[in-house]
Image (cartoon, rainbow, N blue to C red; front, side, top):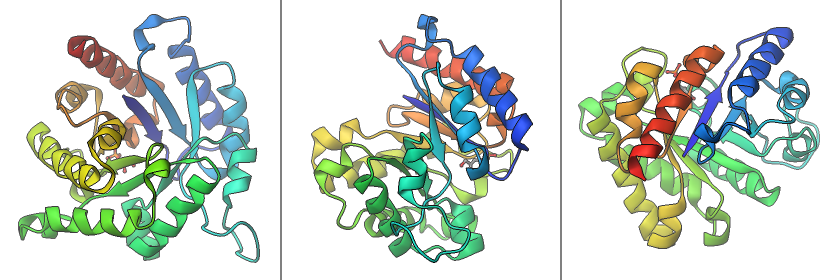
Length: 259
Ligand code: 13P
């Protein structure tokens, strides 16, 4: 189970470092409560090195929020995979709906980025999810299928071993209105089936499928208790150590109950 924070375009550098320090202090390696869980934070690019230093002795992994598909070159303002790995990143969010919505990022670009991430041993957290209109018109599943199809084209079974999918219904992001546990489970099961067809059940069962969209301490337990929801991608609740750690506690409780 992975609990990952997507800080988006929030926090200045001192505040980001303080947040990372507080999260690291809460998720102490010596504390067995969180032993079975994985954690990551994905701060803005300019914070990566300093936040990485703040996380150095903690089990919390460092992720970025995007990556360019090329190795290097004349792509002003973009950030390449070798830059991320050399700054200490192990994870990278790809195809977040805000990238798709505001920068017209296509499934083909998501695919190129995902393959580039794998070439550099970065674990891509590939985001998929439908808009409210697509859900209302009954197209949610077909939209998510098409996004998976586009994103995973040419991503081999070996590479699939280390990839993560995040189901983030666009209508639940930043709205305070999360999907219900049943809605999340239904879509996660669809995603799991799609991955099984693509990679076989053994590989598919190992792939983390995170839920994202207004996950908070008060609803995390119900969402994370769903059999195919194996973690969370947290936006605004990851900007305070207390709420991020509150979700971590719920995840630990769910893990304990599953054992
Ligand atoms: P919120 O938790 O703020 O809804 O954001 C979710 C998200 O977009 C994480 O990537």
